[in-house]
Image 1 (cartoon, helix red, strand yellow):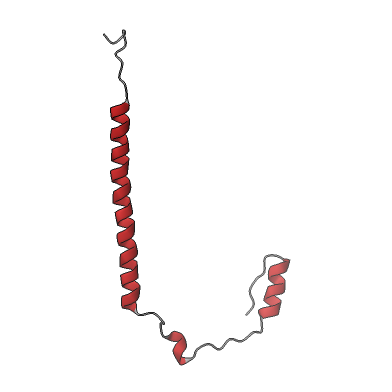
Image 2 (image 1 turned 180 degrees about the horizontal axis):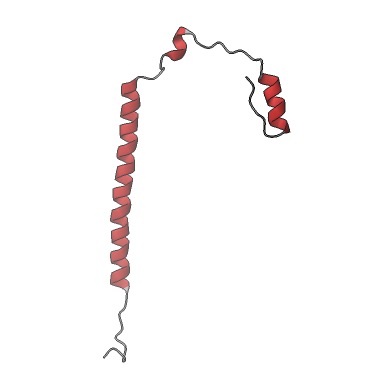
Length: 81
């Protein structure tokens, strides 16, 4: 079975590796090197950090809106009066 190449470089790569055989089905190849609990705790810590950053960004945005609103000078125009 061959793979269809789209350009000249792909054609050369397909020709080079068409007959290569790989045997990596050893016993240790299918066993994870990292425990599932460690991976889940790392993902949980990352999600918590991201959630905290989102909350901090939202609070900072509200503070900035407040600062801008307090520093704004509202002038009544003659047309509105």
